Amino acid sequence: MIKYLKEPAKNVPIDGVFDICVVGGSCTGLFAAVRAARLGAKVAIIEKQNCFGGVATNGLVNVWHSLYDIKGEKQIIGGLTYEVIERLKKRKAVENIGGKKTGNFILNTEELKIELDELAKEADLKVYFHAFFVAPYIEDGKLKAIFIETKSGRKAIMARMFIDATGDGDLCTSIGVPYTLPDKKQPPTTCAKIYGLHKLDRNEFTDLIVKHHEEFQLEKDWGWGGRIPDLSEITFHAETHVFNVNCTEADDLTFSEIEGRRQVRAYMDIIRRYRPDINPVLVSLSSYIGIRETRHLSCAYRLTEEDILYGKRFDDAIANGTYPVDIHHEDKKGITFKRLDGSQEYSVRGEPSVISRWRDDDGYTPFYQIPYRCLIPNTSFDNVLACGRMIDADKGAYGAIRVMVNLNQTGEAAGVAAFLAIKDNLSVKNISTEKLRNTLKEGGSIII
Ligand SMILES: Cc1cc2nc3c(=O)[nH]c(=O)nc-3n(C[C@H](O)[C@H](O)[C@H](O)COP(=O)(O)OP(=O)(O)OC[C@H]3O[C@@H](n4cnc5c(N)ncnc54)[C@H](O)[C@@H]3O)c2cc1C
Image (cartoon, rainbow, N blue to C red; front, side):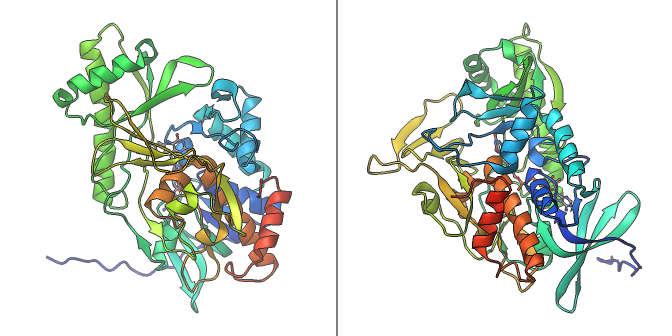
């Protein structure tokens, strides 16, 4: 039995020539594209789904964390995250939980989809939806174009600069950027919006899952749920995990989708059987499974847990954050938080949290930073940048930077950096980080 077929060579039409091509259209990728376009670049953005937003829309995950330091004294995140929140406020599609500066925001993910369309339109982006990045085109040692697969066939997109915002680092790994794929990854979750569970007290929900999970082939696990702005009867749920899968492997990904959906039905069935009066109704599932962790690229700098927890300052800092180190375990059940106030908490569903301190003294870190150098992949190609969850960070640092208000800023920085590299005719490795920080600031980012 032969093992391979040789794909026949063919001419692929060039669909466009751009200054910058962004691959991946979550807020990370879109914000990269918009920031570059606002500076005058001609930008294309490639997204395999039917809308922008990634996990924040297709994944249904509707929480953006606080834009302030941990004391609520100083705003540390601005830019397009702030701008989008302000735009959503006008549509009553966002709410600050608790109304405090340190409070998180909950979003209406469907309104967010439309708002992101508007943002792209205003920036005059060339948008490719239902377009899958499949391969790079390299000529004379230079990345000149990429191939995308679309409904109307394969197309080539030429650009001077490329930004990988695919989450998994599909573009960077295709050109040989080294990466690590941890043995124990933070496992994925299928999220859901469910009608009726608002009638059930959260503790009672937890007790039912703890008591009956085995009967429905679930782990005791850990999960969370939340509200949707202006909608009290439908709630958001991220209650389970699919363990021991590698979501960059096609078979594992397929298995995860099916298993993730089964898990949603299973916990709903527990409620249906043991609290029939609640009668939960499934409103929607994430259109694909929420992937927490896959590849980490090797870049000019690997951010460490220590950098995060002790708030190391960088002269090329392009992002600030406060979200704690948050690790959903694969080797043991539950999750661990290490917070910037020095506290640590380990939680498993239905068990009392184990609270301790990771820090010996009573000091705290108001916020941490992400440097530009974490976005520069270790490659001989000088026209590629990474942003989003693939950027270089160790396990602990990744646990903190992986939330959207942080990664959105990495997108904005990549977009501005790519623009400056073209303008100054420099490699992305050699642009002036002072200029990068100033240009980000002029465009609304908070740069410290
Ligand atoms: C269940 C779950 C709950 C979470 N909870 C929160 C939370 O409450 N708050 C928070 O801030 N963060 C949360 N996170 C983390 C956060 O959502 C992610 O880390 C973050 O969204 C990753 O952003 P990204 O832009 O790197 O990747 P993604 O959001 O995954 O975006 C990647 C984009 O690239 C596209 N793409 C991928 N490959 C290709 C390709 N080959 N061709 C074309 N397009 C491609 C994808 O369709 C997608 O739109 C959660 C994550 C999960 C999974």
